[in-house]
Image 1 (tube, one colour):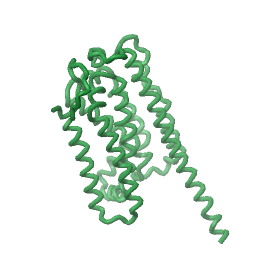
Image 2: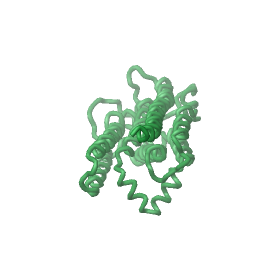
Image 3: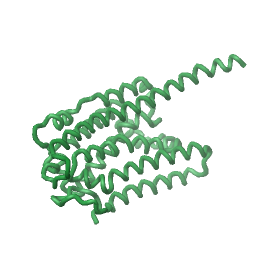
Image 4: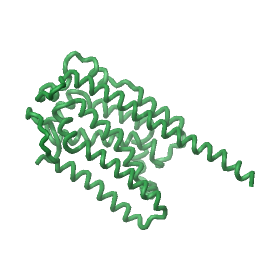
Length: 277
């Protein structure tokens, strides 16, 4: 049994189930740490809020597990670049915001009492820095020579997956988390932050889309899967990268705009209702 999924090294694809123990332990460790944190906080003062946090966190953890375990991990590690890119969407763009939304408010209050940790967060999650870090990490982590090097062994594959997850957490942190406080990062700037990431054309996307030959040796040399070619699969991967990212950003922008409009209505309606009384 492999601890972490890496390229299969020329073995033909089979639908025989193969668990990846490292991925299971990684997800389980996160779940245990989260349960311990909730238990440490004591009885809930707001049961509805705690249930909402649990649902968000569980959803993020399920998406992370799906991306790290069979069959997506195996297909993405050594057979199909398109599945590799779908895993990126799950690990970097979909699981992180759900995990962050699942953190209780008391967790963020605790962070504010740790000046050293807050200093690190302030440096990493400043919106411009977070935007830059995310896009540099994702671009480098998808560059063919980097992917071919890392996917050849379990440690490299683990580094690649964790780099996606950490980059995603850094990217989403200033949008979702209340600390550190960025007063100038208003909803309007959040919309610009998300929108720019949605329309940004990364060099790796252009390279994958317009290359005349397969760019990834890992997927070019993989045993063929019926109905696909390495080049067409690579072009599909580029489309998933671009359109998938754009779709996630549009949904996030819609949520930010909705919350912004709701707070504006409440702010206007509050004084009006008070005057009517």
